[in-house]
Image 1 (cartoon, rainbow, N blue to C red):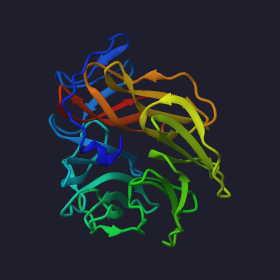
Image 2: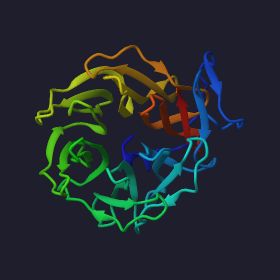
Image 3: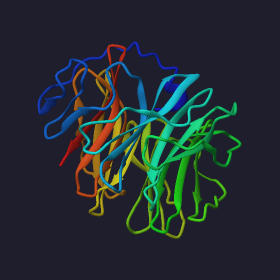
Image 4: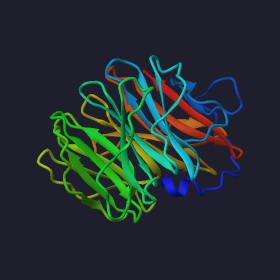
Length: 326
């Protein structure tokens, strides 16, 4: 969901339940989503917290980190919470809070184990990307501005290549998707436009050196790939209505795509599995009477599938949830 639009969308939604077959209840509170059979659900933030646009990371030393934005436009900040087991989450810590709006975080970890959080902010009166780092997830450096885009920038998605290069795709205020890289020595490339009418980018690095990008274009999901030599493919339309895609390699040469899609009068999380060109029929991952949005999903090094997302019920924010399936 577009970051600027998120802050303006009314939360006075009337949610209706979906079928309960093959779904399991979450924690014993009425506000919890329901997840498909085989998944285990835990709560990341308390009930009532507005948590949107999460970014999920598996730490090199074990455990997980989640970054998300919360609060309201004009007083919106990015928080990070960590967990050693995916079941118990630490107190969220604010990342480099500024005077205005910080949103759309993207987490990654470098070869030394340092956490990096990229996020969008209008603290300079124009939306641009910033970066803060942390050794422990609790104490964060002062935010440093990344190269400015003349059309303003937000909604970053990042992936790291085996040679230490950081790949970055972001959305501009005008709706273009732009790409740039940062070398292991810290030098940024010039920005190039990948798609002129897209949003919600989700970038993944593959073991063969390619990059895979999923995004929303006029309400439909599309993908593109970038060869190891640096050439982007034409857009491939998945034939799916949806938003906020999240994309992860599955460790076996395939890809796992999770996104939010309309199911009756609500938004639910849905998955597809494929190779980037063909995708198998998907399955609904959430059900019940919550509005489930902004998923972040990945396949861990051990092959476990994990995801986090925010939920709304009857116009009330229910916080952030985490689910896993071995």
